[in-house]
Length: 298
Image (cartoon, rainbow, N blue to C red):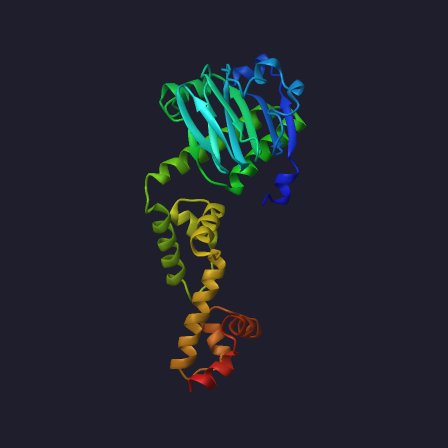
């Protein structure tokens, strides 16, 4: 299911002009768009809306610039330089300049695609440095909101076309490339995500009597707060905050069972300034109030 922000961009395309000044930056965005291709429909829909060079995508073509296509729904295939890939939601197709390729959705399913095109000496240097490679043009990243949001930010710059919008759009493209390459690198480290989660749990448990500070935890792990939230929820079905509350209440159960203290003191010990908020949380997690828990254990 697509989120509401994604629906906003279901049908959007721009082919962009750029100036000599823009080219001096070493990077320009040439096209950006999003397209919902319904099942049992021709591809690409609305061919006449695209310049001639872009219309033969299903038959085979090569383009002068770079393109990143992100598939977020449906199924299809991608062929490039003698290789074939099955495309599923979360697939990224990375087209290199002059690379012969073709791609299209399965007729019966259609698909939803985001794309951005770009060129410039900056990106050429990434190829020369082997950061981008013609040997690695298909990525299975999965569906991630921050990937979709990166496209949305580029689209907003493309629409506004305010001064230096090309620079801002290209900064979004660089972020998108960084996300794709980072996720691919982490896939080669099978225990990476598990390690991140275990370290996050350790940091939360070490500060169980305080207040959760997600930016601090994420910073100590070397990742963003949004990335921490996503990894943690995907692997535990809880957000870091929900997990932190869970271990706090579990610890409060032990304190109330083992020590002769009041509910107010237990709340204070666990870092809750509001005794009544603590009591509501405790009951919602355990099914009984803190005072009821003391009676039950006693």
